Image 1 (cartoon, one colour):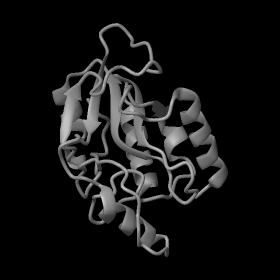
Image 2 (cartoon, one colour):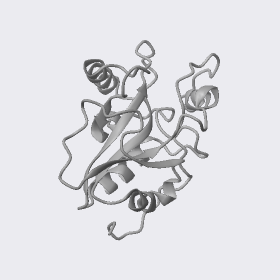
Image 3 (cartoon, one colour):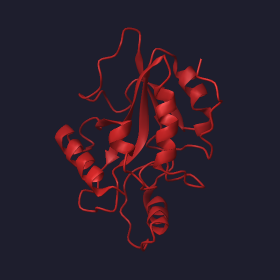
Image 4 (tube, one colour):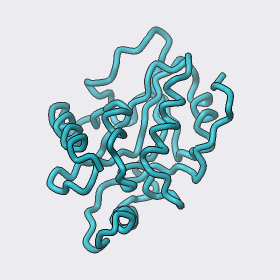
Length: 189
């Protein structure tokens, strides 16, 4: 883990307003969330096998590169400021596109998200980008009623880092993504 990048992300999240049930969670770029991140517990931690943040980065960059996509941003829902071994946690990404939620579902079918929803799930963050005409925010990821991340994901991530998995922190809900992030070689149409 790049501790300087983690600290930079935590400071950025503090400036945006740390995640809180009283307001929409902050959005950050793929680069802010994923560069320097090797914490398997930070995203998709319920997958078997766990794929790792850099795998997510490559696939989400591919989606973002499509002509009909304005951007892809990560919604951070938990930050363990005092634990420098834990990267902030995300369970949802937003795809800003002029395509339908069904199209986004098609693009991410191999990811097997447990929800594809149009609009901002927890309210529009003040940091949300100004959308191009005809574009919408489409959420892909976890929902609060499925797959609690809790002890198993934190324990698994700590074990992968060679740390003791005892007494992990409870930090939210995992995105339900499938074991394969495969995409066809051609671009999304």
